[in-house]
Image (cartoon, rainbow, N blue to C red; front, side):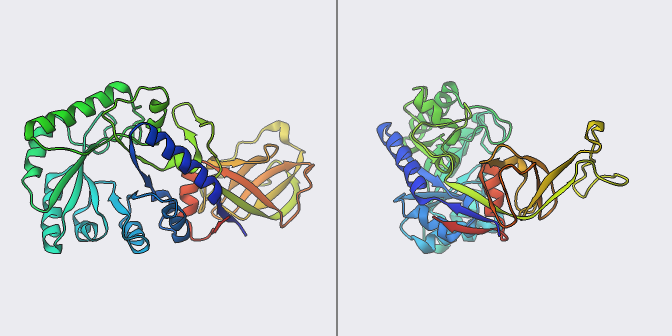
Length: 356
């Protein structure tokens, strides 16, 4: 049976690396837990690291965090939906916002619940996902400052998430200038300038991050040690906090070329025959995971000698050629993972999750 592991020692090593990096640069930070999909044993490992702030894009996940660790600050990191307002005030101490009408609803609900809700206003810096346009920013902040039960604690931005626009010194200077403009205009202090995500970390190493950027929220680099700009692993970090083990459920020597009339498979793919493969046979192994759990594009096999053949909803086929490795039915094949692969596995109820 396939299962996913989280290595708590490697997670702690990566956490310590990031904590030291941010501390030495005067930066506060939060852990993004959305990839964990609310899996409580994994959430517990994150909370036990000692982090004081957790970010997530699912209210149900924030609810679990609040139940497990009431003193941890919870932040909802996408513009709230109207129908989620009550739960956001209940389970999120702060939220990212871009719509005045939504913040007004948060204000009204916070008043009903006797709370003060913190908001971080997101600014558009070019990636064209969420964010208030710069020429509307002064009026936007002016309106929000007048709302009761709302405390503006930050200005933020997201880059690289939709169109792949990369962070730069100039873009963060722009964000810092927006913060200074708002503070001067309204004589209000904005504690956080939260421009930092995993893709921004390399700017710290190259000393290109403006001093005004004082808050990060990090997920991918914590779990994978990834330098997302150079597509490498940061020295001193671990790439395999998560690992998948898939079990071999069949090994058979079979023809390379399918037998019969060919049409598209259920995934819409149509096999193209290489005439050189006629008459060839090879050993094929079937693993007990499939497209319902993960796409093979997100798998990094420890054994680089085999090839992926294809996958159906719940089985993955690999070509192990002459099987010089001596694989047999029941063996476990280990895989490191890319971010999106771990995300889909964690969202699957069919793959067991373990802590090691």
